[in-house]
Image (cartoon, rainbow, N blue to C red):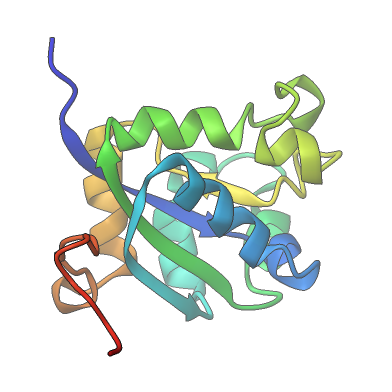
Length: 154
């Protein structure tokens, strides 16, 4: 089965923003070969967070989760590449950083599920829903990568 070009969503959560890890996180995706096709800093509304985390609405930690996600803006990123959903999940690591493989974002930068640095779409279907939730169509771009056919300078 051929691997297809996919798009997926990553949110760098308030703990990642507050700890100034945005560049470190984004660099890991770029080094893998994933292309940034959308990126912005956004302060999320309670309504958007309730929609995004609706599957947790009845759980006791839900109010704290929403409050945490509103502490600072988050960095929302749309990444594109071969098998992007699964590749991003590998780079991010297990939801619980204590169970994450060494070398993943969560294992390297976090010690708790409450502050696990990033959210990453878990399926291609959810990626499409989540991208539409956080980005307008004109905020996600298509472009080629720079190749040796471009020459700058004298």
